[in-house]
Amino acid sequence: MQQPRPRVPRAVIALAVLYVVLAAAIALWPRHVDSGLGVETWPLTTAIADVLSVPASRVVEGAEVLANTLFFVPVGAVVAVALPRASVLVAVSAGLVIAVAIELAQGLGPLDRTASLLDVVADVAGAVLGFGAVRAASSGSPVARAAFAMLAAVVLVVLGVLLAGLVIPGS
Image (cartoon, rainbow, N blue to C red; front, side):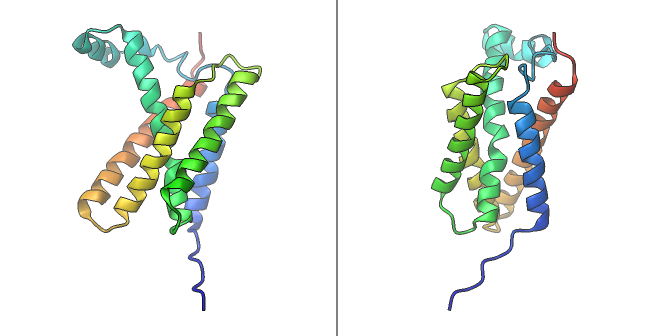
């Protein structure tokens, strides 16, 4: 006799729907979401650029790759929670399908956006990171749970900055 499949908590479903709406808004926004934030002149950006002896624009490029990675952490996390028996390949597939769809929309649509293979790679890496983080946290290890909480906090900050980019007028 087969065991009943565990139900996905409603909070996970609600957060997944909210994430999809936010992801669509950010991905399909007509301009780059950081274009109005002046990120290149932020003190943190210039300090990192000084320490690394690179232009601030290179720091921003690196931050954008990192933001893409962190932006897709929820994709893998939802796969791990919603499909507890799924392998990491399901998270890879979900991340890849969503990332390619976004990049196609940005590259072919009437947006002032650019499609990028690097974005797809970063997005898939984020989905894998999210999947692995949930699996590690569910192992019961206090260290894994603390690491998951820190990762969740960083993801929320990144989503907040991206959301701010939607509401702050661009140049």
